[in-house]
Amino acid sequence: MKKATRRSTVVKALSLQELCRFCQADEDWITELVEQGVLAPVGSTRSSWQFVGASIVRAKKARRLNRDLGINAAGVALVLDLLEERDAALRRLARYEPLG
Amino acid sequence: MEFKDYYKILGVAKNADADAIKKAFRKAARKYHPDVAQGEEAEAKFKEVNEAYEVLKDPERRAAYDQLGREPRSTQGAYQPPPGWDEGFSFSQSSGQDAGAFSDFFETLFRRGSGPSEGMWQGPGADSHARIEIALEDAYRGAERRLSVRRPVLGSDGQITLQDQTINVHIPKGILPGQHIRLTGRGQPGATGAGDLFLEVALQAHPVFHPDGRDLHLELPITPWEAALGGHVVMPTPDGKVDLLIPRNARSGQKLRLKGKGIPGTPAGDIYATLKIINPKVETEEARALFERMAKEMPFDPRAHLGG
Image 1 (cartoon, one colour):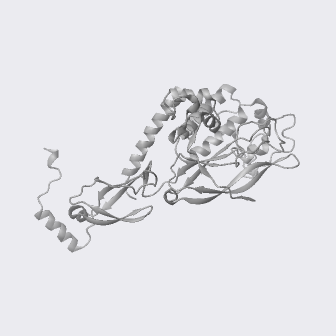
Image 2 (image 1 turned 90 degrees about the vertical axis):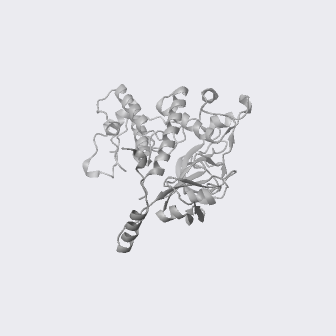
Image 3 (image 1 turned 120 degrees about the horizontal axis):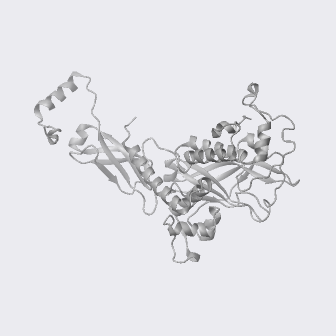
């Protein structure tokens, strides 16, 4: 067994190209997600886009839903919104579960 | 090695046509997709369903698999394919799938003795993605974790072997679920350098605290007299115990905020304690007498607003 001592870093921001590589998607797909409001990059032009925070994990989820279930960008947008609502509801529910 | 009944996994008959198999897969994939379904079980099920489809959608693989016949009863849990079962078939490596995504059964049947495949070793190696579950306390304090990963390694004889490696991962203080830790050069190997390994951070469920972003919520039980009289109570946080001031005449369901005591960051999250008044079980004469006195001397009707 080989040991590694390299330090790990937290992904803070990704450019369009980096995000494409990160979620194995092409630029058109990412651009569609931005147009659908699924992703909210910082920066006004495509070349200056920086994807931060929740956009990174959303892009990954969106790509998986598209690849595994064949959902288009508009469908992915709806699914992700509903999932976020459901998760928030489940979090609230968990708080009100009686103490064990 | 365990025999996998791919027809059973997809819930289709042995003679199902390609359309029926695709339909069954789509339905199961929706149901068990890790981004949609909850829990570890769904993820395992999704992998199984994917693996089954990977075999049954491919006519050559399906034919070879069918030749194996039924699972032999006597060798349950220790399946060995009969010699020569794959004669006359050649399997193409499926690209883009992480090694280790499929079961040993699949790997033995369809990826046995594979040499370097076309394209795999040209250019930079692909990135790998995995999840890492951390305790809430790790997000507060940071942590070092050792991770065992299995990576394909290209040997000097040109053969790919899967090698177990240990990787040290630094979990920084203040990390949130959904964030990614990048381990440079720890992904798939390639001709011009290895790809990166990305670990998506998830938080283990905590019995007391329910995280929401950097904020934490908890239900804080208090006694009726603590609620009525107010005062200090000791409350646990992932970072140690704190003193919390309960206001006088506190209500059940009332929320108290501890600013900056949530998951560290700029700004740090808050902790919200929702008060819950717990009545003691009356088991002694003295306790009964106290409650009887309250019943007699305190004019209080919590149902007054219900009318009637």
